[in-house]
Image (tube, rainbow, N blue to C red; front, side, top):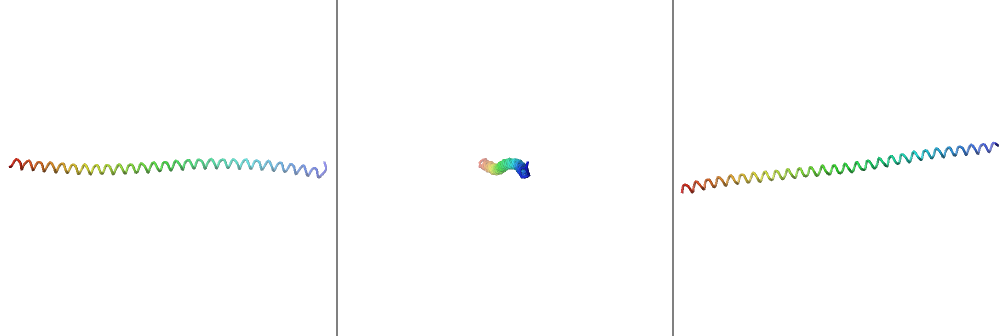
Length: 102
């Protein structure tokens, strides 16, 4: 082969090798993109789960606070009712004594 033919063959071989390297780099790049996309999807799902968990915790806290308020209100009503009942008993007992005296 002539010198210029050898140079052409060498350049063609170099071009083919460069194309193979580029294809390998492109494959690696695409794998990285797939990895990062999968990681982003996982992060997104975890963030959604975290948000759902936060909402559930807030709802539970609100429910607990509402229950505590209801219990306090019930206790207050019961306490007021007990005082009223005791007062009525004393009034009735006193009225009974008055009636007995009269």
